[in-house]
Amino acid sequence: MTNQESKIPIKGYAGFHPLKHCWIGSGFKSEWFHDLPIYKNDKIMDPLKKIADETEEDYQKLEKILNDGGIKTYRSFLNIDKVKSVKNIFRPPTVPRDHFAVIGEKLYAVGGVSEGYADVLKRIDKKNLVLAREPIGSISTAIVFRLGKDLYWDIDLSKPHHQLPGGSGKFENDPNMIPPMEVAQKYISKWEEEGFRVHISTRGYHSDGAFSVLKPGCIVSLKDIQDYKKEFPGWEVLYLPDQSWRALSPFMTMKEKVGGRWWLKGEEHNDQLIEFVDTWLRDWVGYVEETVFDVNMLIIDENTVICNNYNKEVFEFFKKHKIEPIIYNFRHRYFWDGGAHCITQDLYREGTMEDYFG
Image (cartoon, rainbow, N blue to C red; front, side, top):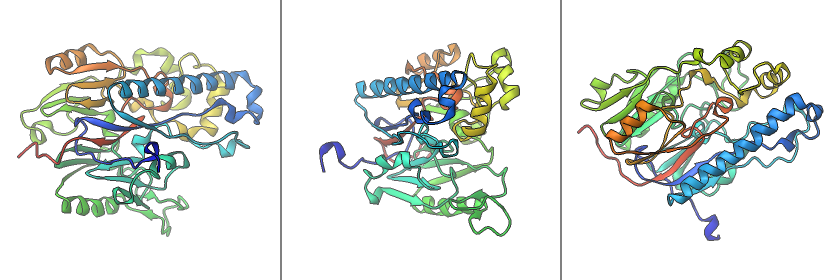
């Protein structure tokens, strides 16, 4: 095995410990659609080509930022030349954060692994890899927040069951359906045996789109979603107002058509594109209306953070706590519903299972 193909180390106890190895996603190529009728439809293909080209440019910019900081990076690609049918358009590996979790010295890959991620997974030693047939998206560091000895896990109870890979999607008498808390209990027991304290919440959305712990004693949050005075006594919290989407009239125009799932600036009246995305690329987008990118930050260490845009309140908070921000503009975050934290997955951070609350 060459040095380039050597095993990737795995460790992560807190999201602000020094980052050393990082997984970065990838988008798609416009050539995928070459054999489909839409390839000659400029109303659909011109915006898709723009998304494809600029998304890859931005991934490469992020990779350079990390490499310049001495961080080793890994990319995932979906090796497809062309799709034969609109029914076979696979979601590219854009947001590894939503599919994996590094907890302690294990990487958890649950719910079936997309082909686009397999090239990185095969470089992880089996002793550090947990391939579990659990509900899709039920364990990831988008919903499991790590703080040394403490794990904060948000579980979506809005659906009575989560579908396991191979399930029919029907609730009745389907052996591939399982209650979410049943999954949770198995891992709570496992992690507690390893020395973690596990805290469960049931807000039903991604934690990394709601709050970020920049360093011990320092939090940026949308609102008091964690009962901070009780769970983080003495810690300073900067509260931000919810994203004021209503001030963005172009978004509000598109929201009526796509239900707040995605936005591509300048294409608010492109009904052909909207119909194509909502019909055939629905799995590619999320619910961007629920995301506030000001808190979706990738923390390099306690003194350095990569953020998606300038926010006066947040930057003053950075200065107060001696944190250096690096602005990284992921231009199509409103399409992919992913910021700097979503489109990465930290694989190895220095640090140990510290107890920040005694």
